[in-house]
Image (cartoon, rainbow, N blue to C red):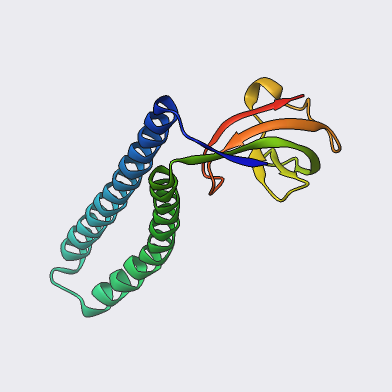
Length: 154
């Protein structure tokens, strides 16, 4: 396992991935806020129509529902920020890790491969179910393991 400088093409690839991460995070946040706002507005209009006025219990219930929706959204937002931070530091470092290692274990649910040196890589689609425990593979990953440049069987 050795650290090698990134090529211009690989740096561009990491910058594109960083842009995708940021735009996906913004899109999901806008979607959540829009859905919550429209849901509260529709619920408020229905309650106003049915009861003829503003009801305190209704607004307390809405605040509880919004809070319950907000907690997982904040957690997802922070987890997405971690990936963005990792990619940013990888671009600043300008290095990648490459080498060969044996497969220590394979998670069959998400096809994550854990190598003997502790690096985690995701099995590429073209090699789906061809890797086995103990196989020697060649890999090129970013230092934070956030992006995989190459992962192939030797």
